Image (tube, rainbow, N blue to C red; front, side, top):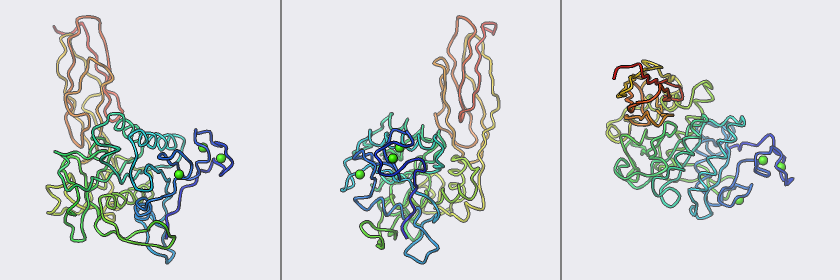
Length: 365
Ligand SMILES: [Ca+2]
Ligand SMILES: [Ca+2]
Ligand SMILES: [Ca+2]
């Protein structure tokens, strides 16, 4: 049956008043960021199909069931009836709305993002990435479709899925034979795992009782989103990093996927429910002191496999030499500039936790 929509508990429908004072009038089920109105109803069909895969209602003898058949879906519309004509600004507004609602207490655990490429995300866009990162920092796991160009995204990125963000889980499409769908993008760094995306049967647009097949990484991503929502319901204390790591660490390892995606395999939800990975990040040191001449600092991070974390410097004089996003056991390298003046201290944040870096003029020149 059709998915069950999330309903805004603090909004009164149709009274023309922004009852919950969140800046959006009568946002009962989400928002339409393409046409900027409170009716995000699908006019195309793509959203209805992916929504059904995530959460078509079950245990009622009607049609299909979603991966999580008790989930509630907040509907965010970003396309017109032809399934295009959106902009990065509309995407950013959508991410910001979801983040705001999460911070206001709505139990949003996962965003499903079955879209990408031109025109809304043609190339690398820092503002778009920052908005996704901010949504991730608020505690939302962002599941993306890896794209349908049949290309290696390490050499031909497909955004937003290809952004290097701890909160992004980027999904390729597999066939019923567990091989790569011919259209599916792949990449051993930027694509995380595979899920079924060829000939997926789900809810169709325009009827409350219609079902049909569609193919694409857009159909693979919602299998992973549904699995993430199921995992979050089964074990609410799992962080989004833990859910991401769990889904990657419990795939069925398959020869066809070994050199195609980071995890080397295809989603296995039963395995994920039974074998959670709980991400924690142990630092070899939480404070370091350097002499005036500065130099390199190396910090070891111990973390379970596929537990991703960001490394950010709060201070201009401390640069991060290693990548801004790392995973599992890793060594972070920092560079501290020469300081001829007074003693100073700054911070570098690993998964949000501070490392204090102090540079003292009493040190060795
Ligand atoms: Ca409102
Ligand atoms: Ca209202
Ligand atoms: Ca509308």
